[in-house]
Image 1 (cartoon, helix red, strand yellow):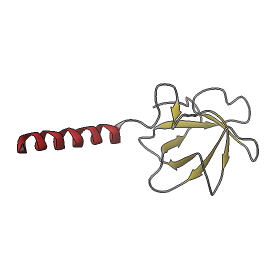
Image 2 (cartoon, helix red, strand yellow):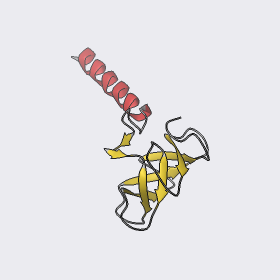
Image 3 (spheres, one colour):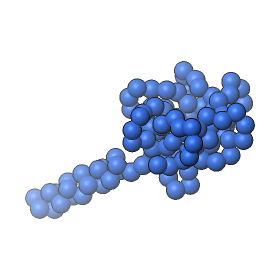
Image 4 (cartoon, one colour):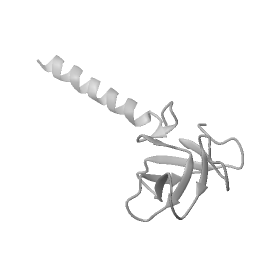
Length: 107
């Protein structure tokens, strides 16, 4: 019985570690079922995603554009009618981003 408990405990720890190291951006270019391109509004309450800006090891490279945010990582910042809303945070983000001038998308 102790061996079974130990094995289950090890499996739980391994699965937790895999989930923690899995990227926030899936193969479809979404995070929490939200497509990561389009018109984005920055809010202070009730965001769709909590975002942390980092300089290294991002989940997504983001390019600010003024038109045609039609590819993964291209974000057009707006004040009304967004595709999704974000809140910038310093800790416990849903998504870590790095702003770039070219080549947006997954690192």
